[in-house]
Length: 364
Ligand code: PMP
Image 1 (cartoon, protein in one colour):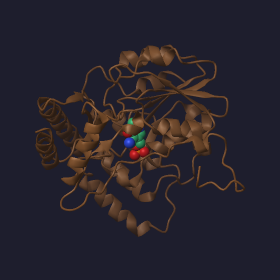
Image 2 (tube, helix red, strand yellow):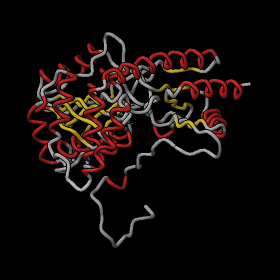
Image 3 (cartoon, helix red, strand yellow):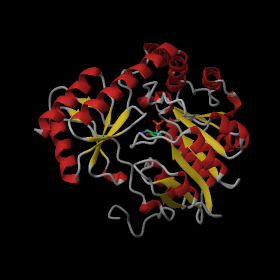
Image 4 (tube, protein in one colour):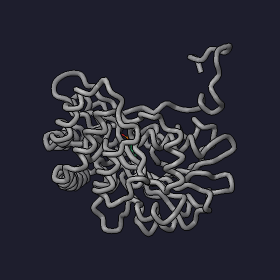
């Protein structure tokens, strides 16, 4: 790599093979811009969370509570969980990285599915382990394909459920089958960043699997439904031995005070969450229908985003440029191996209408 000095310090093997994560774009030329590229909250954050964040300003000189006691209690109460099995992190990204850091090393393998979230290969390679990719069918993870790639070397299976960028999910029965097929030494990480948006009866984020087994962790985030992406706040629900491991290796103050305070307010504002779920449900189906009617294929999604297929990489690129010029910033997903598609986050009402109108014009 050109930025590396041949005589300078050398990172561990595998690090220079990593393609740095490319976040969704945020800029456009002029006028009103709708950032629909990072699956952020269409409704922003709860005003109560904003208030708690502002109130935290007076305590900026103090370290936060390193064990996130109040926040873990609030999460536990809201979801009916055991607070001591919750570990908070600076975004669920940090928790995914910590899990990889704790359980993967050179010679180990970790499995994820073909269009799985791109933080997994970064976390795997950062620890000198090898990524093993299981093919998907119809842009959906496949339990059989994942299980057939598990070997004695496998230490972690990462599953985003629902998955980003596809928006598809595995049912509770399929996740259970996946877990049943794994040897006890393999850690199943259920990344449920979009869990709150899913209204299907056969979906389960993974709480009961975590509680019943020593080799399942569920990760969650405040970045999506709660609209706190800027604060970097996530949590993991873990069997006691895994919570113990994460607490040993995490930074002692890995979650900031404003994040802790806003997180408590956000999780307690159940009315805001319910509104956000209802809003997403309405506009997810509206956008899916309207864009399908234009003749574009849309992968059925249960998240707060959809994957729109343009037929060819050139068409997707042109559509991206056309929409960008109109202040509509979508997400290119070439790095996921989906160059003919764009990912569109569900936005505010005005943005959703603007996207459909712009696509109509583009396809003329
Ligand atoms: N998992 C998935 C599947 C995601 O899409 C994201 C956000 N893009 C994350 C985890 C990380 O979210 P955060 O670090 O903001 O909690």
